[in-house]
Amino acid sequence: MKLRAPAIPLITIDPYFSVWSYDNINEVVPFHWTAKPNTILGTVNVDGTDYRFWGVSDDPAIPQTGLEIDALSTTVTFQNEAIRLTAVFTSPLLIEDLYYASRPVSYLSLQYESLDGKEHQVSARITASEELVLNEKGQAPVEINPAHIPGGCGIRMGNTEQAVLNRAGDNIRIDWGYLYLSAKWGGSTGAAKLEDMDAIYVETALSPKALFAFAYDDIHSISYFGKPLNAYWKKDGKDILTAISEALQEYDTLKEKCDCFSARLYKEAAEKGTEQYAELVTLAYRQVMAAHKLVVDKEGSNLYISKECFSNGCAATVDVTYPSAPLYLRYNPELLKAMLRPVYRYAQSDAWEYDFAPHDVGKYPILNGQAYFKNARERQMPIEECGNMLILMAAICDAENDTAFARKYLELLDMWVKYLIEYGEDPGNQFCTDDFAGHMAHNCNLSIKAIMGMAGYSRILARLGRQQDADNMMQTAKAYAASFLKRAANSDGSYRLAFDQEGGFSLKYNAVWDKLWNTGLFPQSFYDGEMQCYRQKALPCGVPLDNRETYTKSDWLHWVACMGSEEDFAFLTEGLWNAFQNTDRRVPMIDWYRAEDGRFMMFQNRTVQGGLFMRYLFDA
Figure 1 (cartoon, rainbow, N blue to C red):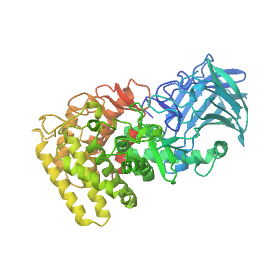
Figure 2: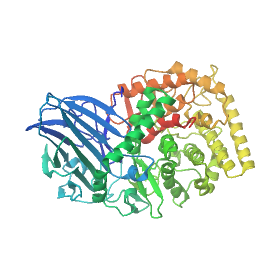
Figure 3: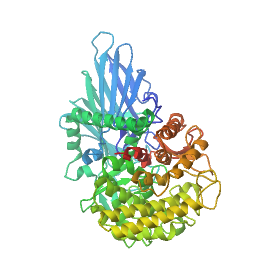
């Protein structure tokens, strides 16, 4: 990978079990996606001398000589005059297999080779601190116990105060459940001190290989309308020790599957775009998957809960699901349906009093109803969320060539499309998903959202065999599009930020569905005018979101790139690539940044980077 990854994924399972680094991993304290430390130390002993290869300590570092990142693994090489050490970190979040997408086990494979022609005695030791089981180090004592793992050795650590699902919020870490460290084929384990913290370790010989596993049992994963839910991997009664043992035994087979998937993902991206694009989606994949938690409700339905990371911590947020959807539409629509089920359940309940779709269903990991200004109507996003839900449902029907999921919620869909018809032609003073920019009346991009929501519902109706209703709905969408084209036009061929603001511009990312569905609501001249505008307004790290500021959004920048020619796509992708290459924020991929230089605004590690897979949906 030529891209300087802003952060290197090492252990990426879910919003809590998360370990990253950057640049030379033996010069950086490993950290959680929030940038708070998750202190881990990895050392290798060569003929009696300790060298660190991961984390920071007083031991000398074995120099890092290489780094490669693919969708599911990170490979780091080190060498001195005696040996070359290869470390492969793999989190097998295989999107097409729900069990592996859920199982909370991540691997570190180590292998050495002699460089000086001599035989060496080599062992490795992994030490993990209490920071992985506490929100803040020192907040409570931890307990440490042996873990009896068939086929290996293990040890576990957890908070002595097991208050499961005791808190919700954004910039916090888990303080319940248990971390497990283990090694295949056996070794030694024990308690340790790491800096001033309690810790656990596993040590084993490299002969010439060793395999470590990191696992986390969170006991219960999500509180869902007052009921604790377990992770998907537990649904058939499996316990964590069995899961770890099986994971150790199947590593070789599973790693091969991961390698095949990663190669397929990269190849498709390169064929549909550029090498820079392939690097971006490769880096995004584990981040997107690990910002969700897959659980099963009491009726046996899958729920895939997103966390709105470094934004406000909301869970099952509709306008976060919307941009993340392309990854799941391409590889596994069931996970997209699992994102939407909580929203539909909440919208059908007496607790939701509005005739438009909700913004979210709670604050991670507590889903008891909307957390984002539920009782403040003026802070809602009615057109935004109605349009999102209708577009996503249409996209699911297309991906599955089936309407079974839509038929369950037709009453809501019909109510939401009526809202769009009433208010979508010229939106009032509302938020859109870019709520950080404030309220805006007459928002042109929001009007496009309403138009595409109507077009999406027309597609659903046609699949249901209601052709006359579908035709009528599409005629309404066409009439609104014609109105848009007349009222939003600038004299230079581009289109405005707001209907009443002549000369303004904005990224018209919602129109990507018109291109994808080939509905022809907007003529080619619309796209040509917009693309010409974007090229003129482009800065080194992308095109500003609109004329008010120089900041932009990675997901929307990619969506408009999909609306142009191959040359336009490459041009806009290069700006996005530059943003991650140059950003000052060494954390998992940010999505709101300054287009002039990639400087961080807010939002990191968010699932919206799934939007970078929109290109995959074209000519799929």
